[in-house]
Length: 323
Image (tube, rainbow, N blue to C red):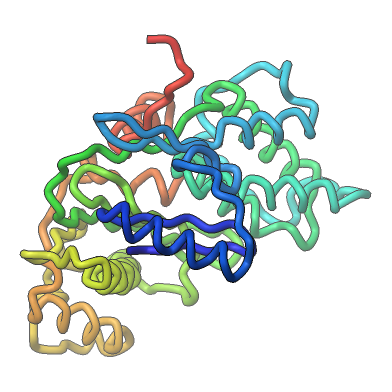
């Protein structure tokens, strides 16, 4: 049995219904709880369960954000960010009221819990909450216009999936025009269901694309390791190594080469981490073409055609869209 607790909201799941009933009776005797029945709406997330699986979306929350910002009647766009556009701190005029920008980014950050399609754009916007400008606010408004286009987009978790981890790791070398730090992006699928994803600026500057790809691999492997432990706690251990796809031959060669070279001394710790997990059969590294690299959408803004391909491969569905 798994119990998820957030302040006074509790979610309980178990294959044994009697265990759930016993727990509810025990909690009611101790705290006088209110039983809301089967999962339907939890912390702003709408859950729909049927014979095919579970669909999660945040349509109501997205519409509330649009309503608060006055964008319910805005013209929609097909992507959350313009391709090739880079934000920086000296771009535009600093806003007189920065609280509205911070509140909007805060709402969008929570929306990424079920909306991986806006993860990269929100990651970029969150870097400027200290001194946002009108250009940053305009970029945030574009995300709202994208949400107007697909407010009910969500994730689908089908039943009867094979419990195997398929992982995609990618990076964008020296993407930040101010610090020249790179962007790490990854997504992890359990079967065909997306369970974890991230877009994050790396902590240090990398001297080559191979180095930044390898640092992205290290971050991804740490997440895979954590998910593996979580699945063991849920009595669903992995039967074979996670398949990790990377589109950089040099990074894979560094991971599989047990002899350190002069050019890899500065990334020695990450080398030890990834090589250890490869040798322990936690992961299996495979090369994937850049055109089939799903994590590409977590490292840079994509054109419309590639962005639609990106969202389709994430397993996103919209229950509220016309057939």
